[in-house]
Each structure stands twice: as C-alpha cells, then as structure tokens.
Length: 326
Image: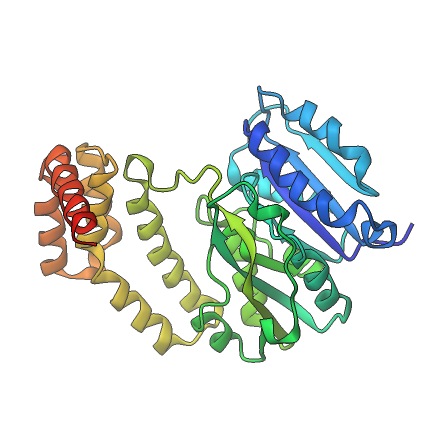
C-alpha cells in the first residue's frame, strides 16, 4: 500500500466528546473522496483514558482508509504520548492535532496539496477560536493568496509562522525522528522543541497558511490555576535553548529581554486565574526569571502577595465598566 502523504496525529486523554468532534471535522473532508482518503492517515494515541474514547475510535476507524489507534497501558504524560503518536504514524508528513481542536472544512485538501510538492520540511497554519459548533461544517475555499513562504528559518520564526500552538505545526516525519532527543527536553514542550530544530536546520522553503485552518478552544484550560505563569516561564527557557540550536542570537536575545518586561502582567493574570500563594511558586519565578532584573522581579513579588480575590474583583469591575461604555 502506498504511504500516506499526511498523518494527522492526535494525542488524547479523557476527552471522548471533543475527540468525536475532532474526528468528525476530518471525516467530513476525506470520507466522500476515496482517492483523497488514501492520502491521509489518522493516528490516535490514547493515554490510558477511562472514558468512552475507545467507543469513539470504534465509531470512526472504518471511515478512514488509514487509521491507527494505540492505547498506553498507563498515562505516560503529554510528552511521551506525543512521541508515541508520531512513532505510530506512517505518513511522510505529520500534522499535530489537539483532541479538542477542529480542522476547518476545505483546509485539509489545500494543505495536502502543498505537501504533495515535497518542497517543504516545515509548515504552519493560522487558527481561529471556536465560536459556534457549526464552524467546522462551513466549507471554505483556499487559494495561493492564502499562503506565504519563507526560505530563511529565522525570518519564518520571527514573523510568527512557527508559534507553539500544537495544532498549528506541520513537519516532515523523518526529520522529526532525526532531531528527536528524548532524554533531554523541556517538560510539556517536546512537540515544539523538535519542530524548532527541524526549522533551524532546514534549507527548504517553509509555508504558512494565513487563512485559519484550525479551530481551537473546545476545552481550553491552559490558564486555569495560574498555569499561564508556567507557560510563560517555560517559553523563556525555550528561547534560551534556541540560542544553542543556531537561531539568530541577536533576535533571540531581544525576544528574551522583551518577554522579561511582561513578568508583572503575567503574574497578575495568573493570580486572576487562581495562582496558588505557595512559596514554591514565588521561588520558581525568582529561579527561572532572574534575567528579568531586580525591578521586574520585585514588582512581580509585590503582585504575588495581593489576594487573588482582590485581583479578580478589580479585573471583573473593569470588564463590567468597559461593557457599560460600549
């Protein structure tokens, strides 16, 4: 059997309802076209779910020409589940897809057409937030005016074409396996680190679809309990790693310095979403954001000790005031 051009790789855990919608957004685009169906592989890596995930998979697996389902005996964590889903795939290219995200109707064939040229090692797509369940059913047309290309890896990155959203990243599978360092990666960031290594070493063109091809946000929890702080901090650590991978030193350093200025605001927003007062969180800030400098660290520390209830009260009052003025 001919190898699929594209494997859509979906790591999942206990999100059966969202996974159903995710798979439906793919089936809608491929299942009525036998030739196109054969070009696509769907790979689901189940991280030991205890809900109805297996039933959802059973409902959809026969609708696709190429469908691979694996289930881990225990929850391996996000990073190792990413590793498993990529290794389980057989396509030339991989498109990560979060189990609560949807592929815009019409975009899959357009992206596959780009990949068929074999001109690219890395690609990316724009996204939009979920507003209505009908979004994934609306058919959209894509043209060459909806895609930009870059040769220079640094220009591609700094133009915002390779941001860290899981479902926005497309890449050549063989290069991912070559660049993988499974013993040395930042927790929760393996998926992105490997793509960045492919990017910086690639001499080929890179593409970015500017018209949204992904719908995100069925179950967006990245800010819950103040987790935005840790995402922000880890993104700064990642930038420091990028200095050692060959990205432009001057531009990366400028990004690190600019991001450091956001520390007080990030702490404030994290507290608005329930960041714990635990001393380990404050120690974490000082350990990993030392490069921000004394002024920003002191301001962030003062904000850290403001009661979360007061932060939320002020935030909600400002929102209500803005709504009244509109």
